[in-house]
Length: 293
Length: 317
Ligand SMILES: Nc1ncnc2c1ncn2[C@@H]1O[C@H](COP(=O)(O)OP(=O)(O)OP(=O)(O)O)[C@@H](O)[C@H]1O
Ligand SMILES: [Mg+2]
Image 1 (cartoon, chains in turn blue, red):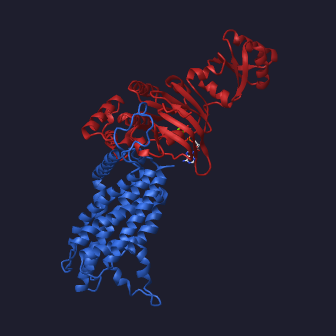
Image 2 (cartoon, helix red, strand yellow; image 1 turned 90 degrees about the vertical axis):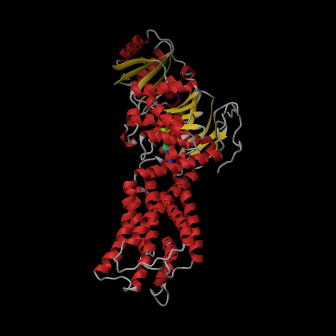
């Protein structure tokens, strides 16, 4: 908060009516209203939200776990390996969906609001500190990420040929911490992108950043399985993908949903928390830069 | 200039944009409770920048600004509780309907849902937007959008209302309607800070006017006092195809009560104290010089005259 319930800034109560409410209270009320606004907009745009959320994961599991087995192109080698691949993919798909929400629910609307319209301005003039407006965007985006995960998980778990037996093992403690952490991290990443990219640069965002992030984001394979990709004895691919934040999300869901090997949790959690902090910091700073001149 | 009685107080307030443009240059001004204060100046004078600083959107690079006694740089969230803003550009929320724009604005400012709904409906009636209530704001004309922004700005009962060119783009009828509403509002007491390049508007509606150009305030007073400062009762505007500069000199010397002459946009502006019998003299002197006068008009000194006096340029571009 800029200030709490002090009247530090006031000099002359007689002519200058003091604010009716403390800044902390006014900010909290405004913050809730901002969230409500975002949720109302979400409800109005469900006809866009649902297809954009459902389609990509559906196509992924449909192609890999239904079409491929049908045409004999089994990925993973058939039998037990195929069941494992299915579990790996389901976890990856949930992680991917949350990441795409961060982009689609936070970054793209923000690029637009900063772009040809200046409509974010009225919300910036609401009685709360500017950084909390940015935090509100992240919270609303994270909520959409959670909703997306809830929609996507059943699809990913159900769509496959009968021969593929999906062996999911849910680790509840990991799942219930991973969901909010991943949602917030991806929404914060969306905030960072949304404040750094102009409308005309959106194709670059997708083509040059999102595309490699998703293809090298561990969706179709486990990070631990990358070790054999070596040059001169160095597992180069396994090393460089560590810079990809999506790795930790998909590995985290692998830990939460499967019994297969995954990156250790004592690495996943701290790195995700660090990414959260980094993206929130860059995102909030970017937001302040864009709305204040 | 720092006056604790003032609702808006700027001390040496400055803004230099990245890139070097000094948009506002050491501004000192005080606006008093209940006043309608006008900032009058041409495009690029620094009006929007000044309003931006006072409404926490633009960070000053020098000086201080207090609104309702609150330092807007140190305590922006607190200041925002007390102000209402009609910005120069359309900042309506395109994801929401006309009514929702007002409704959520009310919620942002701490109204309960019932009160926000009632206030939104009342304002839609008052601003003649009720028939568009459930349309997306993209379906509004420019003038309607402007009215909706005005409704939104007064909805939460601000102590200080900032209007940045609120009537630009409004038809005469909507212009009058907006000023009627603002007039009613005035009786309930918010201080109004208006920026405009329309001198009639500043003259008619403002208690005091500051004339701004290139980031500096050149004069500040009541419209009447500003106009009186010109000293002339009449301004004769002479258009000629001939030697205008030469004619101007002759007019200055020959016309009874002539005080000074200026060349403004190729026309001669002759300031005269006293009103009667000026035109025949002008025509006679032009005839003597063998110069044809193609157009001749007489106006009272206006804020435009004041602006020309101060800058040598016309207010309109
Ligand atoms: N964001 C910005 N970055 C850089 N320069 C700016 C910015 N905004 C305004 N300026 C410059 O500052 C000066 C003052 O601009 P401002 O918008 O305050 O003028 P104004 O009096 O509101 O003009 P108008 O009547 O056209 O609205 C101009 O020279 C303008 O080019
Ligand atoms: Mg302006």
